[in-house]
Image (cartoon, rainbow, N blue to C red; front, side):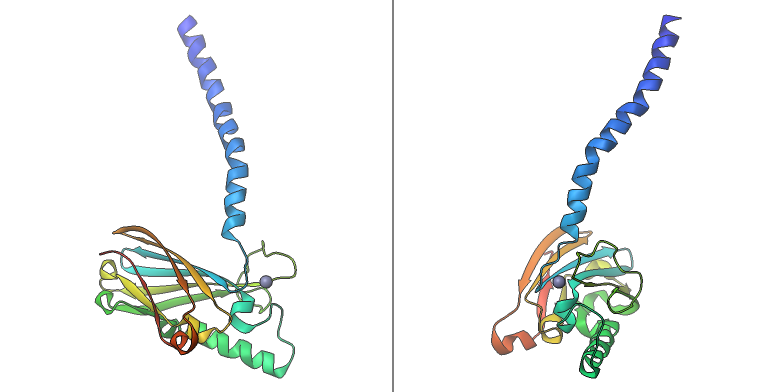
Length: 196
Ligand SMILES: [Zn+2]
């Protein structure tokens, strides 16, 4: 009898332990989420995931880096700037030249920006600011062989000064930071590399 009662009590107690753990975890999670949505002009977050036959590049950027303003375009010149930037992002195999050893072809490109009316934008944008987020998927015959991506982001987007990148691959997880090279060097591809 006693044994059964104890089991029942522990059975009841367990869910509340889980609930307490969940509540305790919430502030940490939201702090992490805020960090993930950091919005600093000039800086871009680039996450690269190499998984099975795909290389997926996730980009989070203040819109200012990409077009020089953070609202819907007003003038014809601004509209042209937006059109050119969107075209560059859609032609992502020009922006991201993945290690030829991986033999990748560009797949779906998903662009998200509330200000530009693209996709499903992040609802957590800071007031008065706007982001352009994107997911670029590449299909590869040997994705695991990829050890670098040559980025043409600094030449394409003049407002971009720094790229903070995390790479998740079968070789491990890597963090890399690339800064805009000085002068004419910025027109050259910047190599994001990892592994051995
Ligand atoms: Zn901003």
